[in-house]
Image 1 (cartoon, rainbow, N blue to C red):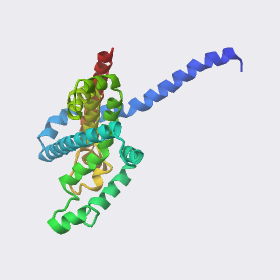
Image 2: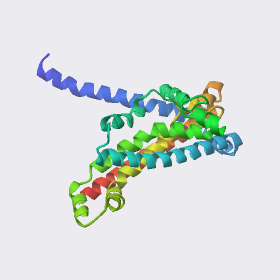
Image 3: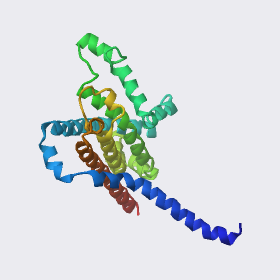
Length: 266
């Protein structure tokens, strides 16, 4: 095949690949929009069961994001500035939930927090408290899944700080406490907000691990799965639209903060 023919074929192949990729990405969204009866949204919001599902999802996602933010910022700080024992192993485990199959994550949570689990058994034996199949179990599952989002994003933001700024702060008498709260956190603000925002959206959409520890409780993803299997497509469609909108808003917020960070650096 001559070079001229290859030169003509190349842009055609790129175009075909692009069209196929966009079709694959857009087709599910178009299908969802086509099948959703938006006029039923007011009735959905008035239904007590639907309100409970929405409230539980917002409540657990907010709590788990708050916990993940505190733990994630702390872990990211230690992994960035301190040489910990087994540093590489700890760094690996802070990423592992990102790549674990959801069913495996959920099963491990069952083993750890079940009535006879590593953590669940002492709570049940000594305090008669059951962790599994409670709201707390949902929060734990969500936190387990979203914590790596915060750790990785905040760690990258801290690593991007100019070391000369930190040296200057030290030379001016900043303590470690002051350096952390007055210099590092403000400079890493965009990355921190991006990580927390993505973590919240991920918590709202968490299904695989949560469904194994939630019991009879339903978050939005669990309700979508249940409604789809029971034939209630209207409910499944509208709840799916809600999660899609949350994801779109999340992407928009993250992009805006990343753009503001670039503009600040320029």
